[in-house]
Image 1 (spheres, helix red, strand yellow):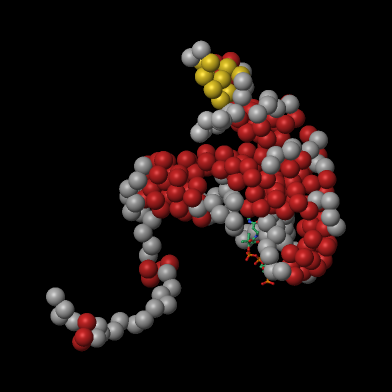
Image 2 (tube, protein in one colour):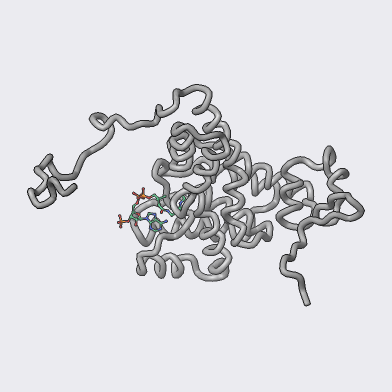
Length: 258
Ligand SMILES: CC(C)(COP(=O)(O)OP(=O)(O)OC[C@H]1O[C@@H](n2cnc3c(N)ncnc32)[C@H](O)[C@@H]1OP(=O)(O)O)[C@@H](O)C(=O)NCCC(=O)NCCS
């Protein structure tokens, strides 16, 4: 009978830790961080090309301004008087389908549809009013410079294949069918590349989490050392539109009840 907990990731043999079969002490100093991440995720050591590609992916994700929800969440929570790990944790919890989390959906979309006609697929999604993960951006309306750069690198390294071509075709098909350009965002581009690299779509959010945590750590740290606690309180007059009731009297029947 199999035991209650199972793992193929790491184990201790003779009081030594082994990761995917390699002694941890041998990995230290010999593998780069990206190579070690590839090893834990994929189970094997990367080739030089795989390492370079994954490295570029993590760099593309490392930081993208103070504006996104995850940074707002991380800094707001730190501003409430919490320590670094709590702020960073709050930032990770803010990742969702519209920010950071789209990678999983984009990988699933590409892996399930890559052998189909892109226009047919896009029409199907648009008819059902389902958003296609990996397309559209709040800020980038003509192109997402990160996606452009990632595809340039994928071409040079040798990871520009059927998923990347399909992702480009989908971008064109959206513009043709919807009559509006929705750029392939960085999640879409990375989703295509990691699909070329043979990763399962259920790992999708993991790439974003691993890549963006350094940015969240930097922002939370900055909040803690540079700002006063509670600095993230909103100025109601300047920053908030009030849509509720005007001040009103509590009904007599609710008064003097204690
Ligand atoms: C990122 C996102 C939230 C930006 O949304 P937005 O600023 O409201 O988008 P826009 O104003 O440019 O476009 C709005 C229109 O495009 C549609 N649209 C936007 N993204 C779409 C998508 N991925 N697939 C299909 N239609 C989409 C909207 O339904 C809306 O259509 P309408 O005008 O007919 O009502 C949105 O594009 C989205 O949800 N994308 C999918 C998730 C994703 O990839 N997120 C990662 C972002 S880095």
